[in-house]
Every structure is written in C-alpha cells, then in structure tokens.
Image (cartoon, rainbow, N blue to C red; front, top):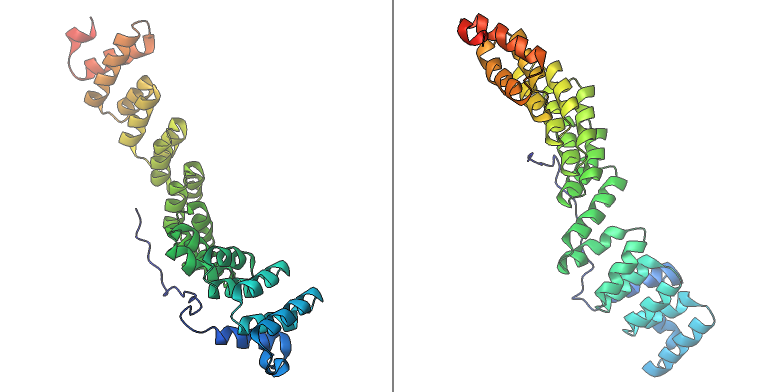
Length: 289
C-alpha cells in the first residue's frame, strides 16, 4: 500500500448552522428574490395564519419569489423547501430542508444542485462516508485541485478515478497503485512498460497470472530468476531450464530437466539437455543412463 499524502490541506465545505433561528437563510432568500425587502414589510400586523394563507395564494399565482421568503420567515421551512424543489431550485431547497431537519431530502436536493458537496457533511453524519468523500473529490476536481481530488477518490475507494487523476499529475507510483487496487492490473502494467519499468510490470502481470506477458517483461528487465519462476508456473519447464542452461547455471537447470524427463520421457530435447548438463557437471555415468 502506498503512502497517500496530500500536498495541501483539503478544504471542506462547512454545513449550514442548524442550531440558529434560520434568520440568515431568510435574509439570503430575501436578497435573492425580493431585492432586500423583508416579508414583514408587506404583511403588516396580520396574523400568522393570514400570512401563511397569503403565501399559499402567491404560490398558486406562481409568485414564489415573494412566497418563499415569507414562508421561511414564518418558520415554514419544509413547505418553502417543497416549493423550491418543485421549481428545481435545488440549492435553496436543500438549505431549507436542512433548516427543517429533513436531512435525507436536503441531501437529495444538494446532490442535484450546483454545489453537491454541501451534502457531504450530512452524508458523513448518516454514515455514508464513501459517498461524502466522492462528492468532496468531485468538488475538488471542479476547482482544479487535482492532488486533493485524487486523494479523496482514493480514500473513497474510487480507485480508477484516482488513478486517472494521478496519471494526469504524472505521479506514476500512485497511478499504478490506484489502478492495481481497481483491478485494472493490465492497464497498470502497460503503463509501466511504456515507462520502461519492466520489472514492476512483470510483477503486475504475474499477479494477474498473465504468464506470457510476465515472462516477456522479466526478460526485458533481465530478471532471470523471476522469468524462470513464471515459465515454470506457465508449464514451460523446459524453456525455463534452457534459460538457466544458457546462463551456465547447470546445477539450477538440472532439477527442472529431471522433472521434464519424468513427465515426458519421449521429449528428446529435454533428454538431450539433461545429458549435456550432467556431462558438464561431471556425472557421465548418470548422463549415459
């Protein structure tokens, strides 16, 4: 496992303060929809029920710009949120649902909004940590904070997405590790090959039981023992023995040739090589048998 270290502190989006009265949310809605006029200025001294009825009449008329701030000031956050959700004003709807303590609805709206990362703190409180991390990672990616985004994707176990970002950052080690964790061993190995890192590529091919590719990579890396091990695993015992023979490692090649001779006594090349090896080792009597 590689050490995943961010080079900058990850910025997090703070949740809306749920302990307040909601006045700041009301003021925001007023600024957005009514140019600074407060709902109370138009409502005079009428009763709460009358003001609610008036807000509903405005909704029926399609005048949500005036109705929603009025409902919010009256503490009717859920109703105001429903109106905003119906109008597809997702961010404001999410804020209102959050103020109404309707967190699952707030999450749904935030995820559809232009700032989906606002759902992350609520998701973490609900135990959905991976989903929260992905939202934070996507936000960091949009803000072109690629180091932070890659780290967050990795922590969320979205390994392929992390790998793609590390590739963009030219961080070969973390890119390969991310792809390996994603099960994309062949993609990681090919990336290593393109960077002439044949030994590591061979190890990844071997991990994926791609024996031919592993043997080729180890050969390029001049890692004889690793290539021999892979060839034996692949069933190419005689070929492995031949490599050791060519390296003049006769004692190492002999057990492999003995194995081939027992498995296939009619395999003339293996028998001939075995005789040559025994001859070189001075075991002439055994070579003639």
